[in-house]
Amino acid sequence: MVTRNGVRIRWAVDVQATRAAAARARWGADRDGTDYRGALADPEVDAVSLCLPHDLHAPVAIAAARAGKHVLVEKPLADSLAAADAAIAAAEEAGVVLMVAENVRFNPLFQRIRELLDARAIGKPALFQLTRECYLTQSIVEDRPWFFDAKRAAGGIMTSGGIHDFETLRLLFGEIASVYALRAPQRVLEMEGDDTSLALVRCHSGVVGTVVESFVMKSLTTASGSEVHTLRIDGDLGSLQVADGQTIRLFSERPEYLPDGALAQHDLHVPPADTFSAEIAHFLACIHTGQEPITSGRSQRRPLAAVMAAYRSMETGEPVMLAT
Image 1 (cartoon, rainbow, N blue to C red):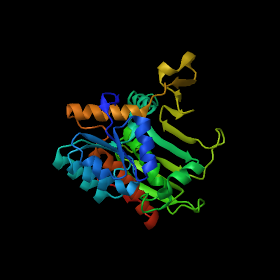
Image 2 (cartoon, rainbow, N blue to C red):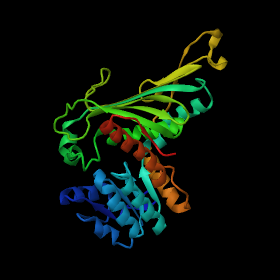
Image 3 (tube, rainbow, N blue to C red):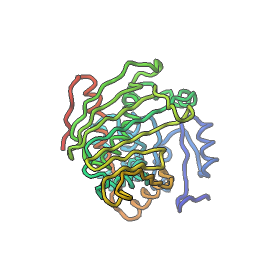
């Protein structure tokens, strides 16, 4: 019996038997199979981690909850708000933990930025610019054919990447008030959903900015095949930006940041962390303590609502207001 973080891995499940067997060997699971229902019927299974195509997240989460299993499901929670509500209701009725594996909430870089904003290091934030550049490697094309089906993927990159970035905005600025989105001309022809899109976002705090998601953009500063995120925030007393994924570049007019009374650049290094391990540890803690996860189903319905609003805006050409 192999245990990790006090957890025994009972099942490894994949629709492809060879991949299920490989996962079993890699993670030291007791059994493998091609049908998740076998795992859900196992009384020794207390919790499940669901890494599935987007359209299967809610149906399998609901089945797991009804089987009495705690659920950690990859983002997005569901492919529609109705499906998300059904998953949330199923977990509540069963009395099990439902947590979305949204790792940005466990990223110390964003936590440090939030601390700087709370300390008014740049005064009152007014504007943000957030960009995600994803390079579509051949392995992604081969390993995730479902990703290019707009129905199965619940859209395109605004779902797969935007869901992370809307959650980042919630962490930094609070709830999102409205979204106005545009879809760029299609350039990844194998893909049905949007390969590049952008959104103009307003938060209830008054902060506004842009979110750009693209499989077309190629970074000019890093090797191909990487994923690059950029973030800049401007306030009335300064600005900050993420320089390299681990460094926050800060300019501030606050006295404590002005050596000799002159405006200077401050590079604040944030040590990297395994955000995936952190989210799993949080999931296990919530099971043991009964506390609500930081990224509970109810919490993660909100970034999903922002994504759905973005797609509705792309279709109508109008901004979409989100419910408070």
